[in-house]
Image: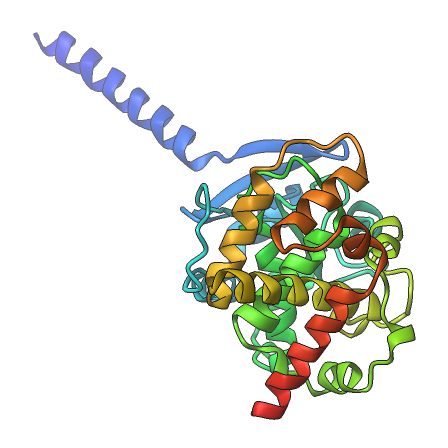
Amino acid sequence: MKKKFIISLVILIVITILIGLFISSPGKTKWKNETFYIVNVSPNMQIMLKQDEYKKFKERGAECFISRMLKNFHNISTLKFELPQPPKLTFYVLKHGSEYKQMSGLPFESGMGGGDGLGTSALVVDDVWFFDDTGNGYGCDRVTIGLTHELAHIILNAYPKNNYNEAFEEGWAELVPQYLAEMEMGDEIRTNIIKTLKNDDIYELEWLMDNCMYCDEKSMVAQHRKTYISMYLWMRGYVHEIEQKYGLDKMSAFNFMMKKWSAMPKFATREEWMTAIGNIIDMSGEDVLHSKKLQLIGHKAFLSQLTAQ
């Protein structure tokens, strides 16, 4: 009896140890032939870290960064998106400098943004921001807008997209902080750029779809680039037309747009896609793609809002 008890106790201890190892050992994933440890920090957020960063994370954590991201995620969630599935924030932590630039495919060596090959399912962030985010400077409106823009990419990834183009992804992500969350008047530099914007400064949708969003200027701030502003104004004009035609508030209009676009089949040609987009607001596909009608509607709506304040 004593021998059986000891054997049972040993088995129980071994099982307990194995369960503990299973729970505490993170999973792994590959990206660009590099191995990343997967750390689930909350039901809504997971962090991907290479071995050195994972060891550092186990030693000191990244409480400020994590709490800041979850807080911003919560704030965005209050906008009442009608998502087909709950989003999950995923961050890949990269060493600032050449590793960040090479692996992310972005034209800078630090910060936060989409990663090359990750689509809009995850973001990359440099290790300095991740580990040493003390909050200095991150309460200012402009940076809050940029952060909300990046998190919006993850949230909007929940919508299925049979037709994809980077320009639309950036337009949606800009619409969230600037218009839906009503942050745009907090960035005086951007406000002044839009106030003094001339027709020649505005890009047509076709150009934006055929060229990268970083092709026009050297500004590190995406929100100040005329490519981003042009795509934002196009999106603002499109949502404005939905508001007017269907009698919807802006959040309902946005959800209406995303549902309609998500339900579209995969089109064989861009022209068919633009025609379908235009039909929703009684505008020709030609005007949607090749004119600046929607951008100018968005510009007028922005100026009207500015005057009303």
